[in-house]
Length: 329
Image (cartoon, rainbow, N blue to C red; front, side, top):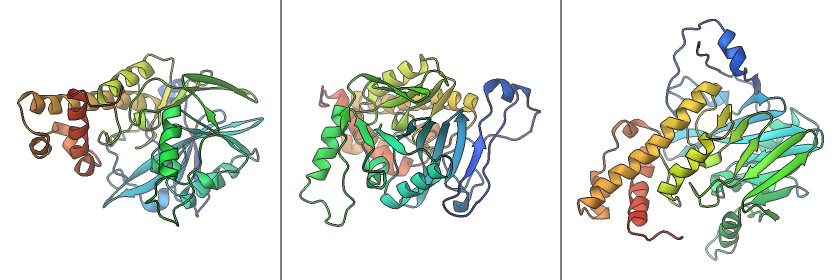
């Protein structure tokens, strides 16, 4: 099957390009382009500039991904949201990391539809996906897993929280296992497939369109970030997602690519999490202290992945906690 890459063009602020994601069948009919997919989360290595973002891509009828650049030290990578346009409103899965960036998302949605945002799913409770939630309409229903609600409540009540920090939006409805929403003409499943990146990880699944938004349970070529993760359970959660009837797996960070590439990269990511676990286990079994393990760890091809420098140490520490039986049950 020929491989097709997708690229947006620059537009003025608040008017991202909308690209149509071809179906698998249509991709198979395309002429060979000769283009090589650059397997990296680094936007600049892929030939992008800051002006190419935000990117909106149409994945299926009424289903769109939204990619915005964010910084982590000197590195930049994308944070991905999903929005679903229906005849009865818009559902958004994951916001962005501050009110200004989330407002850009809101404005991008308004450029696609006149329907109001009625539902926001907090798939990841981490700040890079929730700190801008105040930019969403007050009338929206916010859904989250109970673990994520508890985490957000702790953040809101933190006595050291800066007085000028944006308000923490506490979810109004909880999803412990699965909620099926019939929003206009769309059936939308909000599901918990198991603990992964945060412990309260939710996914959004559209069974008719066969699209699964995995949020931070799937980081496309971004080093496994494990500050609050459940490493082995994360692998199991990905395997559950891979067993579902899905054509397009959408990551929470990294690039949204062709359906076949996204499926390939999900398997690559599952193996990456296993690779991190295996390296930590090797050092743990050898009796190496966690402090020394952080310095000695070698992750092979993952050494070149985005955020390896900032996330490698925490990943080793988290796997050590799991191996020592010190993670919450």
